[in-house]
Length: 331
Image 1 (cartoon, rainbow, N blue to C red):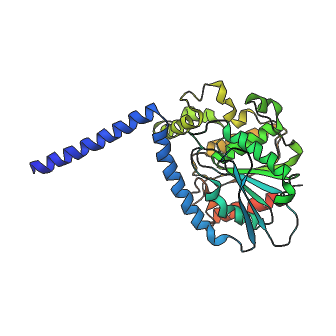
Image 2: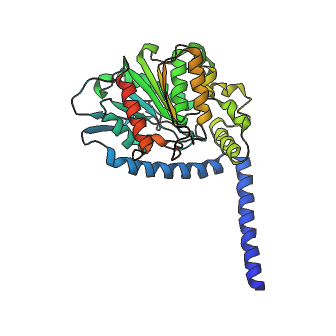
Image 3: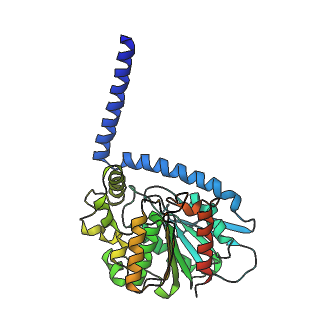
């Protein structure tokens, strides 16, 4: 019994030492927390990739890993197109999520193929993730991707005159920031960005489960605050991201203008990011920006984060239909 007690005490001591070591390492560097979060998020991503495979139409072809930014190994894009005849539709350019520090265009490729089955050319954008690359690198890369798509539209089958900038989670933040910078030269200048496409090329935006209002982080506590602080430290390189003016551009709601493109914005009722979507909707309402919403507050079963990828659910199918309808009705 004494030996068992000693063994348990030794094991608990090791666990405590490990947790203390992790805590110290996390304080010194954002990498340990980033690795933990990335592994969990990417595991979910691989599960969604497999789950969406049965929904991919047989008539979709893909061009993979097209470089769009010379010298940048992360700057690759995929183009998915249906070979079935049908009316011409705007091109959807999708920015993947993953809390800015995980995910990839590859993990949502099957979902983008499903979207392409609806008649649009769909482009998946790869970008550099944190903490290797920090803000505003992803937004600048997406701006370059849009310029590349414009320059190579014919060979890629892209309609560069009608682009729908879309994204999920952190990708929705990046997509909305890019759309906001194209619509507002002042916003672009605030991060020394130089869009090379024009506002009339943006037919609309589609934003799922996004992060648009960083002021909401001030009200978080416990695990939720630890998670947001860990992610933002990796993305910005500082724990003072809420008060450092260099990162004011992350809160897209503070920079949206009346020229922002028509928008479809959606979030699950059980999503911790719901407040961000409601803040974006309120901003679009106040400015008179044309928009549609798809919300699920109070639904049973609860609709959580990144629900749109769950095509085997009613909510996932409703989201897919909403995107297809929204894009088809754009001028």
